[in-house]
Image 1 (cartoon, rainbow, N blue to C red):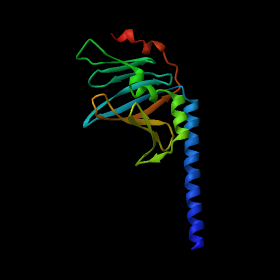
Image 2: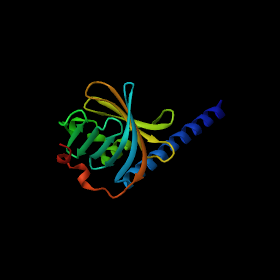
Image 3: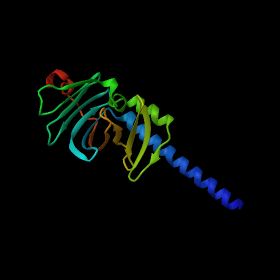
Image 4: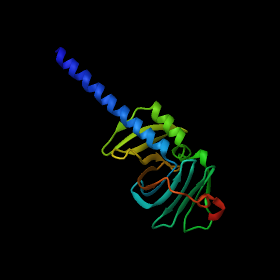
Length: 183
């Protein structure tokens, strides 16, 4: 019985140590990262959309959707979404959206330190709660980079965004985030 207890304690310690090491590597990756360029697959309910984005960790993002021609752009304070169907973009205060926290590297690191990591099929994740909305933040198991998020949108739809990073820390033109370019 005593050997079983010792084995169980050693096993639990090794799992805890492994998660601690993984958390440390994820934090280290985030600390070294200023921006990502990535392709995405976004699923809202059963509808899938694809596209590409440039995410800069001072709350800036520029996304272009492949088929719909929709764009999503944040300048760090505001967010616009514009579709091909309308010349008038929808404006949002960034702090009223999930992107406010997802695009904040320091906040993500702070949450990684204070939250427990969990696993599902292919990803490691943790959950944050912002404005009474739970946001799951996913990381790739191999490279330990951000790999997506899951949240609820303004219309109470489940939104899952899977990202595939193809470039890290490239030189980014700040004109990509000037909202007046998209009116």
